Image (cartoon, helix red, strand yellow):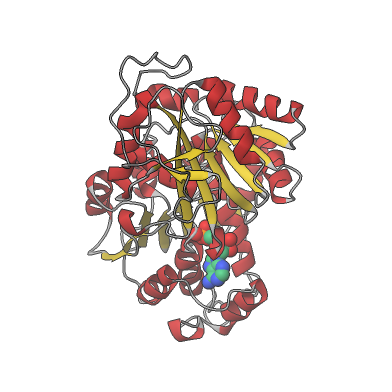
Length: 434
Ligand code: AMP
């Protein structure tokens, strides 16, 4: 569907043409007309679906596009809250490109881990748009450095993730300083549970737009599961995967910061252009690494969940889960780093036999089964493969992979507990490690 037919002004449609956006994505086609009418919206959509334009274009049009006839006055008109610094910066960059035809649109990115001085300066100039992580914005609000009384549109981006990260009190304190008659646009992977109760508290008769249920997600990403006996076996499988001739760039996920550093170090020693990305790095180091990834100077990024969330680099052809995510939904966020902007992508998940229950949780969450596959010559030794036939090509897979006969097999018994695998399935501990 064309952007013109959604009711967007020429000032935006021409910017979108320059960006090479020909047609609206499904979430844009559904959300933009409803948001332009001023409705509150609760939208579920997958990462990489074009959701940033879906909320930002109507917000900009309503707040700023007609400033020529009706001067909008100074003050923050659009406030976007995001869970992570990386996502905030990405939303700010996208906003700059969508707003390039506007006479007036200043954007402040207000995130933790960055110096206060520059943020204080830009806030004192009363920006039109603020894109922020909740904690740092609340600091500025408490110091009375920002006034939210003119906000017309409030966006809660990846609301489920903000709630998971414990931002509920900060969000409520921030929202309390915005006008009650504002428009609220909530985007989230899921719209149920805590997200629904948040929405009930702060939205007015929201329209629900459900773009993709878990079972429909990521059909353009080929998902593979490989069982390994132990750490050494996983490392060999990883080495094999990274030598795929179709690999352009890859993100490899580990569960701890230390594991990310160790693995990035090992890959660099093997001659790969590898780098780590995790929460122990300061913002400048993280930005530098992401820029190098965007420029293709980093081919293998070894990352933890929080640090890699929101990364949008179209060259990412492969995602490898070297360690399993703690939460099933993180699996969806991880694999969504590939297959960006309608491209196809490949995701590989390495698991030890004792982690079958986690695989089942992921399967339940996504509604898709992950049939185990085997790399010829690198088969796991610990689980016998009764009646293994000739290697066969896995659906959508490459020669050398074969689906395990009979699909899921019984969990292997008497397994050694893998030495790097913590048994604690505790969110707080996971957040500290990541
Ligand atoms: P998002 O889900 O907002 O993170 O967007 C994912 C990617 O899709 C980004 O690289 C956008 O620049 C790109 N994108 C968004 N909308 C469109 C569109 N209508 N046509 C082509 N690419 C788009």
